[in-house]
Image (cartoon, rainbow, N blue to C red):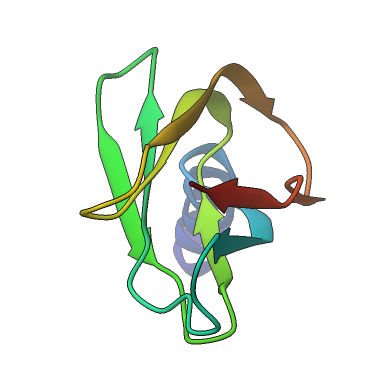
Length: 102
């Protein structure tokens, strides 16, 4: 009986405290370059004020698994005009619109 109770408590607490994330991906390009590696993509959570930062690969592709929330997303690289999107609700897997930095 004690073993059954411990198993039940473990299962309930596992589901209660389980975290899930959403998969977000997209492409970012640099206007005057064929290599789009190293663009910083900053996901700033507007609710808990935490950042998740990733970088694009040479093809401009990026992907992240991120907590649900309301975000300000900023794309930036030295020598280019940054771009941002505010109040982005991440509540499902999504592909973001393509961004081109000028």
